[in-house]
Length: 105
Image (cartoon, rainbow, N blue to C red):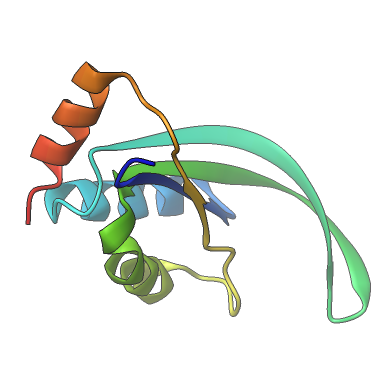
């Protein structure tokens, strides 16, 4: 098991995705944030919702999850944003070293 994780969140616009990604990178809470356009379907307040969103795949240290989650919640426009952590069990050693260097506290 490594000390790194991918954190996922989805936002309603490219502008919001860029704002969150930039904040996480500038604050060294993430080494990389990939932004992918997606079509989402979900239930909210008893109704099926359909919309286009931007999915953020945030590469960071597992130990930074709480800080990243708090930053996402501070910048996110949804009442209940998705913030899911996916632990990374194995990674290329060079990538792992780079990620750890970029997110050094």
